[in-house]
Length: 82
Image 1 (tube, rainbow, N blue to C red):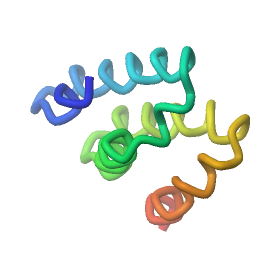
Image 2 (cartoon, rainbow, N blue to C red):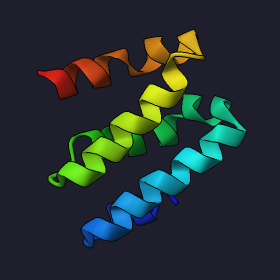
Image 3 (cartoon, rainbow, N blue to C red):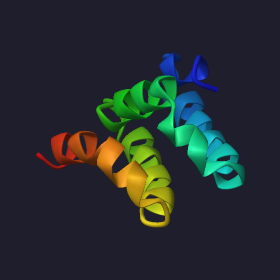
């Protein structure tokens, strides 16, 4: 899934983020992995609105139930807000 996040097609990147969200629903701890953090960060800064929305939705679903993830993703979220 992480490899597909770099595809050129917007629809593919959006679906990859949604698939990643389903995987994280089963095991939220994988958001703590460095490769996952890089992948999500890249999509938070994506040119496509739909990809950025999917990334924000992913974090929104899981950061609230796992406070330690909020610490790991805080800088990324602030960067996206600004």
